[in-house]
Structures are given as structure tokens and as C-alpha cells.
Length: 512
Picture (cartoon, rainbow, N blue to C red):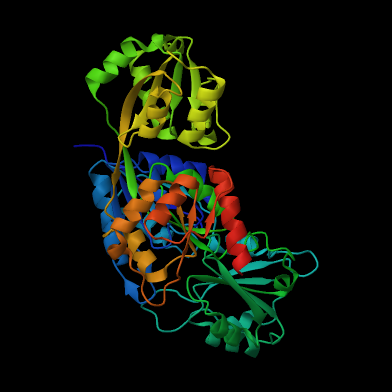
């Protein structure tokens, strides 16, 4: 009989993946099965190994997808099969998360388990709203309460009147629907109508929204603000002493929804920079990048690699694929020979420098023409052997100019990857874009522009969706937008992700 697996009851935290514990990430990466809730950020699943089974058991108020006993059966069944099972629960599994029930069932079935705590919503919501939950002058106690207990109950077992005269802080989980009743009981217990209240929805995420008022005003404040669930309610004098500077909601792109069009494997850096500035990012990879090469051609180039005096990288993709293949052929970087290295732009250069190689030439403008100008005018490339690393969409103009009467170089090209258009018609992110729209769509290449136009029918916005402006990373992308009759709202001053984000902030903030 095979040994039973193990179940890990893991707190997925309040939403921001950066607040997940190191132990939680380790276990997600190793898991055979991941059973996850509605409030567990789906981005955490990106850490899972490709073969891992992912089972959604999320619940929303009035929309229970899988009963609790069936969730427990899934955990037991997969563990009995010898699998490592991660149970991802929003916040902390033992704070209104039914983790105790699941642990008890695992004990009954003699299934080994481990509990990994998470940042619970009250702590996160307060911190991201700048509210000190405790304060030596105003609150020396913190109480966690819930307005939503066993869904089979029709009454609240908590007598909120008992908390009406508290001098501490009340943190109410899952209580928006019950708030009128809770306020009535708190006031009946002696709480002043002037007691400060803060409500934070989607805490720690870029769509975080908060509203502040008093016990007497908060129901009307909620209605006017449109705040809904999931939300944390904080009641106490500490709410009035929240930080004057909104460190989270005050970031320059907070409240802005931005579409990143880069290939999925490349989107992370731009998405992270935008998120750090407060943006809500929708990733729509209009293209995919895959390693693709002619084995015979690759062998010929590598066999004579040391004859080249220059190697030119036209993209970071080319760099990644070149060195991936190079290290399979050679175990010493010196096998490259004494060649000099050119990169079309700073991002490509950074990728080269990861291999402890110096980049000899980066043009002022990150485009092929500028690179050709530099080589022809300043480097004397007549009869010089040059290797250009590229993809299936070759830099024909660069090669032509280097080989022309201007340059007279001897140029070989080595395509190592192919760019293909993706089909986003069934992508959940595309569905969200159609329904909600965005403030801006950022194009990082001509390929993404062309794919966007090709899929325009599948991306038609609904009437109430935000209508985005279009941003371009550089002149070539801008020209493609114009050629395809798309309006260009702004262009990065330099073709780098950092400058692109700066220009995005400048443009979107100038509109408000």
C-alpha cells in the first residue's frame, strides 16, 4: 500500500502575491495538487509546476460552488493517492477560514498535514489604508469579528451590543451585508454615532478602494461610494488617526487600468513596474515567442563562431535564445572568441550583461537604423564579418544597410526564435477587457500592434467599458500604429520600459 500524501493548509494572504510567505511559495512550487479559493490570487498558480492539478473551490456570497464536505473529500482523496496537496485559502486558514474544520477531517482520516499561516485581511487592510490597529492613546485592544458565520445559520450568534462600549478596535470580516444590523446593535450597546469607521475593499490589490465615515454616516457613505465585497470594516478611534499620506492609494497610477501587450514570457517586468506605480494590469499577450532555428545552420555558425568580429543582438529574445543554445554547445564563454558586441537598445544590453560580457555599442536611439548608422560611420566595417542574431521577423533593413555600399560588411544572420500571433478570443483577461475596458493599452512592438488589429473583433468593448488610449514604446511601433489607422496618444522618449512607464504616468495624469 502506498504511503499517503500530505496536505498543506496555506494562507494565501490578502491578495498581493508579494505578501505570501516564503514557505507558502516553496510548497506551491512542489505541489501535485492545488485546491484554491476565490480570494486566493490566481497569480499564485503561476508558481506551480505545469503538471500540477489545479482545483477551484471558491465561494462567494450566495454562490457556493463546492460544499465544504466535498472540499474535504478532495483533500483526503488526493492525499490517499500519495500526492502532495496544497490547500490555498485567502488570508489565514485559521482566521474565519474553516481551516480548523479541514484539519479535523484530515486528523480523522490520519492524513499528515502542515499549517502555513498567512497575513490576515484585517492586518493587511489596515496597513494598506494607513490605519494603526492599535495606538497607545486610543486603542489597546483589537477584536476580530465576523458578520458571516455558518451559512446554514439564519441569525448571528455574536451579540454586537457587548462591543458597543469598547475602547479598542473592531475588525469586522464578511460583514458588509449585515452592517445595518451590526450598527444598530453597536449603538444599542452604547457606541457613539460619531465613532470613526473605515471600509477597505480588495485590500492590497491595485483595485483597492476605501471609504471613511462614522457609525451614523457609513451606510450612506457606502451607497455613494459603490464599495462592495470583499471588504474589511474597521471601527474605532484609530481610523481617525490614519496616515495623512496615502502610501498605497496615492501612487501615481493608482486607479488606472493598463493593458500590457507583450508576450507572456516577457510581460513580467513591465507589469511589475506598472503595478509598483499603482496600476491595475491586464496582461493580453498578443504575440508568443518560441525558440525556433535551423539545426544545420546553427551548427555551421557555432563551428565558425570565432571568425566574427562583431555579433549584433537585435532583441532580448535573441540574447536569451542564443546563450541557451551556446551553453549547450560549449562550456566556456571564451569560445565566443574576441568578437565585439552590439545591442540595439538598453534592454537588450542588460540581457547580454547578465553573462558578464561587456557591450561595446548601444546606439542613442534604440532602433536598427541608429545601430547601422553607428557601425557604418564610427566603426569602419568594410569587409568585417558580422553575425546578426534575430527572429523570424528579420531586421532586413539592418542587414541591407550593413551590406550596402555604405557599410560593405560581410553579414550572416542567425534566426533563433519565431514570433507568432496568439488567439485571445477565449482568454479570461480578454473577456475582462471587453467588459471593463482600460485607461491605456501599451504597445511594445509592431508585432503586438498587428495582432491587436487582427483580433479587433474579439476585443470589441462593451458600451460601459473604459475607452483606452494607445501608447507606443518607440518610433517603429508608432509608425505601425499610424499605418494601421490607430491614434497614438503618447510615445516613450526613449525605447525602454522605464521611460515608457514615465510617459504613461505623465500622459494619464495630465488627463485628470
